[in-house]
Length: 493
Image (cartoon, rainbow, N blue to C red; front, side):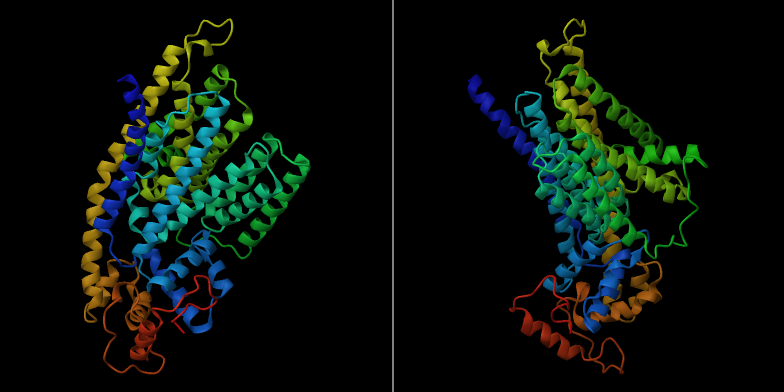
């Protein structure tokens, strides 16, 4: 009987791990709608330019707010060529990227468990799954454009994992450089991976014949190239507030950073977010100190986790410099939660290792008992998981509000007589995107998939010109193989 119960525990852990993902998939399926929203309309201009003159690297590299979204835009263009720009497909790519990120964290957890000679339980999986697939990230889950954030997070976590491997080969270093470039050109805070990666290289011995300094030199060279190309022609967006630093506005800056990190667990409550963020910073410092005291573990097993947590902290700090002028409330935006999770996930991993301490793990000559440490670590993990689950539940009304908004906007945009009114609900300057809406209508893209093109004859230069023949090309090409990264989007010629 006892053996049967022991066998059931791993099965129960896996079922509970899959539950948050299954819930997320169901909620997305019930609320998704194929309507471009806000910044997603910027991709229409790129689709139109690609149709006219082929894929232009300059257009991909162009600055968008503070970011250069080379790789996310390539990915979205590829999806558009395969799906007639069904924007809901981008949502599932975000889920996939988050799932792969969780897999990398699982591998890092297993490595730490092996180093600490801890029993390989699976109960870290449900705890991390609740955070990674939290519904509180509704802006990212409902807005395909936000796959850039999940791509950035995966690239950063992957790069740090490769750099922190016990025997870092030249292949691992090359892969880390490639992932760091993806992170840099997916979201602005990806630049932070370069100094953090250098720290990992310094702390984790290199494998193979190449000395440590050779790896560091290659990494610094790649970082210099990435920074030079990123900053060339860079300008601060005019609509952004003045830069707030810890020197000219320390209280505002500090409150923003704390709220940014705590919002993953707090829901839409600013003071709670700041308190939880401050607690998270404390745990990020305390957990490794206690772990090193009670466990004999190689530094190389902990450095990747510390580096990932440091990336979350630096992301909060850099974002605060550019956005704190909007107010601390802006730090509660759900789009930032995946970055905040990079603080809490390493904390969970280390706390669960502490929760598995045995009596003989106490330091020699010390009087400290391991029982209180185990209890406090387990309680802390439970509080983190429950807070994240509560935040997910609080976000459900926002999912419904977004669907109602897109449903009404879609109905109005489908009707040429009310299209401007519908466009104003999903873009702040609708007149600027009226031409893009006509382009989508003419070529049966996004919300116009499956609808007939306008019957009226278009004037020369009108984006709706030749719509009937264009729709015929779409139908003829549906069975033909398509290249995701072709220099010209298929069937939009």
